Amino acid sequence: MPSTFISADELSKHLNEKGWVIVDCRYVLGRPQAGKESYRQGHIPGARYADLEDDLSGTVVAGLTGRHPLPAGPDLVSTLRRLGISNDSQVIAYDDGSGQMAAARLWWLLKWAGHQAVAVLDGGLAEWVRKKLPLSSGAEPVAPGRFEARFRHEMVATTDQVLASLDAGGMVLADSRTPDRFRGENENIDPVAGHIPGAVSVPFLENLDAGGRGLPPEQLRARFESLPRRGSEMVFYCGSGVTAAQNVLAHCAAGLSGSRLYAGSWSEWITDPGRPVETGGAA
Image 1 (cartoon, rainbow, N blue to C red):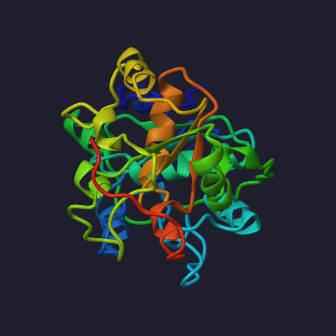
Image 2: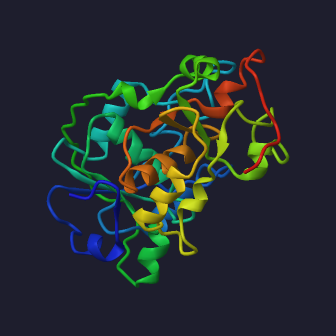
């Protein structure tokens, strides 16, 4: 069963197949209703919609959390059941194909909840449309699922653990944002520019080809294995814990294991002015 990526051609063979759940995760930063409206206008047949902020994130607490904190465990389970997901479901997540970030967020959340049969549509809806595959519009009827979580808390790196690693070592901190944001040259989202000291720049978009599809596993593996290492544990972060999930997905697709997500990411790190910040550095 697919557990990282699935092609549009392969997914098209399983439309309306019992046990398969397709979730549309399209989201536009700064335009919170755009994804839901696009879903209503056209989506993969049978897909139901999950909103990044309402469904795939928890409550923001000013001064304590990042911009997209993890949902509380019971809330996530309720959301997954509402989407029709059960423990024996094969879940396919997709977004518009411009970076796979929201789809990767759902992928990671399901893995965190102990569900292995989940994959991301390679190239997203853009690839589906390019192949002239069918679309539906409006709402889809969804029967509630029966999902029970087995949370894998070892997949999450906390702020305290990241802070401790700055002195103790052991972590390779991989910053998933664009190189200019990593260096602190163009911070247009968060109030403080820069990166966590010692981090390396690993922009998530470089895991994709020009068509928004994932690079071949051997290329992804070479990319991750070439990173400077100050430890054996790979920890990905970004601005708010969303695009970093795409790096975790690519790391897994490369055949590598054991990576963790710093879910609070940069926007949580900078809530405490006492935490160190670094600027500059090579991408």
